[in-house]
Length: 220
Image (tube, rainbow, N blue to C red; front, side):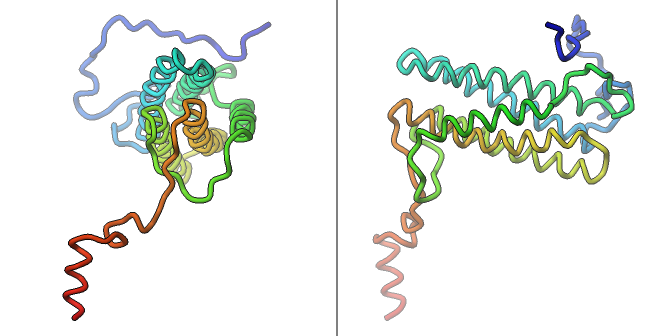
């Protein structure tokens, strides 16, 4: 079976080149851009997301010793890391420099996330309130991934107003943030960790205490 994308053609034999010391970097086609350029910022956000997903994957792998089903999530997260690198590859390349078999995000990646969302969400209790991050380390890490994913999506939306990009990446990130939310709940479910639901009156202003006594005094 032929591979969909070309394999990387890189040879990293030195880490620093000093070419970025002036605040510029190169796109795949050789164009120089400031490091705060919208395109650079967009795939930088995706790189950060990839790092956080790597952390969550490691936590899931370690947790699989006690809860074997978490190994499935670890495999999914590894696939997502490869997909995010594919997204970064296409974003680092101007449209006129893209090769026919260059790694990218396709409809298949977005659809696979939808399949996993539906399957894993099917076994979860319906939510009656918003859920707060926490309950387990993996849950909190996946919520961090979710919020970083939303930030990456916003960066891409901003970029898309200024330059032509492959908009399948925006759809993919939108779906990925939903998937990360479901995976955070699913991981807690598998590990038997209780979810923390949002209770507005758990705020200081809704709870009795010294502050409430002071407010009562002020009103008299």
